[in-house]
Length: 351
Image (cartoon, rainbow, N blue to C red):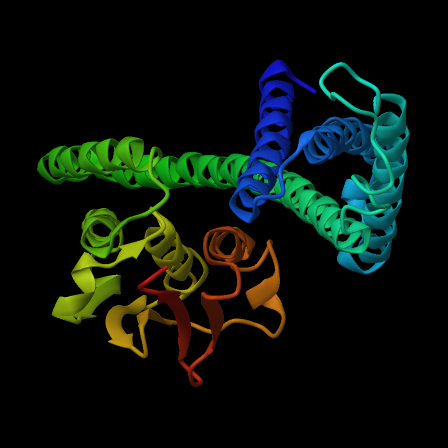
């Protein structure tokens, strides 16, 4: 255990037991029953309470009780609280009788000044409750600490996985974009120059997007439009593009390059395989607290290819959605009819 945690533990031990003792002393004073015997009893309970709970803590660490679930842990805690109370009281009573002729007392303690009790039954119940409460605080602290460590570890893993997935997107995208520019250089230098400008914009956006988990749908669509502008130069009249974007969807956030990747897949695996080319349509809407993005393209997919890496290559999209939204987002792709494929993403807008 590191120094800061150990310091926190002993601070809580001393403050907690001292506060309990002080409260009891105040009540005794208010009741007019505070005397040397009572004071000795309360101080002894405090000292042996600290010793007992510290030993209890060492047993918890040795037997790894912090790894137990609430079912097997609860009876152990109850039994331990009772045992600690008994041990504490036995040590306290022994100390009381050993020190009964202490100099702080003018006369020996007789049976009249100390009944076995000092309301022994009530004291046992109170100390048992204190020990149980001590256990609740101790295990709650470790549960919260372990939970935070788990969440940090999961966040680190997710961050690593997201970066790995995004790194897979850029080389593939750049390769296709450079091919589009290369095809124009000899055929139409002016269009090639325009294409280089558009590619430059795309690369600049891509570099900035790599640093973000989410971007606005408006930013993503600018990337998509630049990409489709490049592809339109390459396909010419074989590619028709239409947009049906709800004005309220621009401000919502999406994973960077996700829509662009799906559009790229639609062209690569759909329209590019058609001799006459085809049409791609992008639509956005908001329904039931979700941002809905639909991409429709000419073509067909074979049964099973929608889930395969070698088909539409969509495992990347599914995995990113899972990491970012768990089960709150959905993704599906399939044949809309005999001539078109529909890809749909649903993303919670309040995530």
